[in-house]
Length: 305
Image (tube, one colour):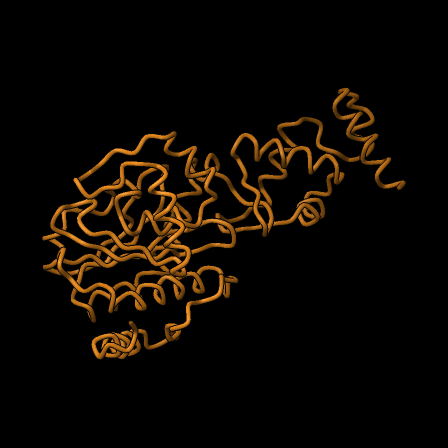
C-alpha cells in the first residue's frame, strides 16, 4: 500500500511540475526524458518486456511507467500484446524496421536458398507494411525472371499467399482498420470483399497458418505461403511461387517448416497453436539442404496430403 501511495504521489508531483521534489526522488525532470528512458529499454525490434520489467529497468515508479507505456501504445510508438510491450509501427518506421529486416534476412537466407534449390521454384521473403507486402528477398535462379516481383517491390497483401498468411495472425479489428472496408482487385480472382477476406483468413488459421492463392495477384501464377510468427504479431512470411497449374499442396509442409525454422532462429522456441493431424517434420538447424531434399521427396510420394 505504501508503494502504491508513493507512486501515486510522485505521479501527481510529476504532473504538477514540482521539479524540486521530482529531483529529490531521482526522476528525470521532463516527460520527454522519461519517455526516452522507457523507449531505450527496447533494445531490438523483437524485444518484449512486461510492465514490471520496464519498471525495474527504468527505475521509474510503476504507475508512472504504466501511464507512459499506455500513452506510447496509443500513439503507436509501442504495441502491447500477450507477451508484453514491444516497439510499435512508428518506432519501427524510424529505423528499427531496417534493423529488424536485416536480422530477418540473415536468419532466413540459408533456409530460403536451400528451399529454392531443392524445389526449383521461386521463393519469396516478405514483410507486412500496411495493406501491402514488401519483398525483402527473392530466390530462384533463372525461374525468378518469370515472376514479376522484385526485392524492394510491393504487392497487395490480400492478393498474395504471403500477405494473407500474415494478415491471418492479426486481430480482425486490425485488418478492418488497415482496409477501411475497401479492397482493390488485382485480377478477376482477387478477393474484393472484406467479409470474404475475413472468411479466408479464418480458413488459413484452421490450416495452422497455411495460405494459398491462384491467379489473385498475377493471372498466370499461384503461391503458397506461411508466416514467420513472433510472440504477438507476424514478423514476415515465406512463400513459394509456381505456375497457375502447379501442385503446390505437396510443398506446403516445407513452407510451414521453413517459416517455423526462421522463427526459431530469430526468437527461439515461440509457442504456436496446435499443429494439424498430419504434423510436418521439424527442420533441424544444421544441414538444412539435406533435410529439405528429404521432405520434398516425401511430398512427391504423396505422404503429406
